[in-house]
Length: 167
Image (cartoon, rainbow, N blue to C red; front, side):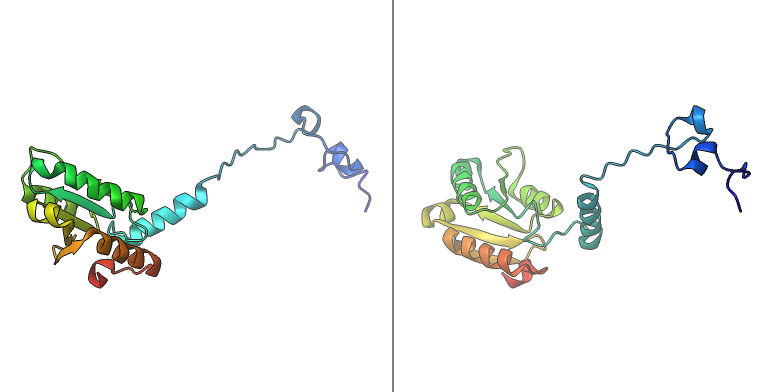
C-alpha cells in the first residue's frame, strides 16, 4: 500500500512533517491546562477528613489543646500555659472571652473538636498545673504542665488514633 494515494491523511503526515498550524492540516488539537501542584495534597486531606469525621487524631490535629481560664483574672496564667505548650511544638489556643461562662467555653472547645481542654483557675495557677479533660468530657484531673508536655510528646510520637483514651 502506498501512502501517496491515501487521501484520508493530511499531506504533511504522509511525509513525516509535524505542524501545529490548523490551516495547514485542517486538524485542531485541544489544549488542556493541567495544574496539579497541590492536587495530591488536596486529595489526601479530603480522604483524611472523611476518614476521621472531623475528630483528628492528636498527632494530625490542628486543634490539639484549648486552655480555658475559669475567670478573666486567670487569663495571664492561661496565656503562659499556652506559650509553654506552643514552645514545645503543640497547636494550642486560649479562650479568654469574658462573655462566656466556663461551661460554655468547655462546650465550645468540645464542639470545635479540640483533643484536650485544659482548665485553669486559682488552684492550678498557684501550683503550676492544669486540669485536663478530653473532647469526650472525660476528666483526667490535675497535672503539672511539664507532665502534660511529656504526655503530649508521647502521644504525638506514637501516632495513635485514640490519644484521648491513652492519656
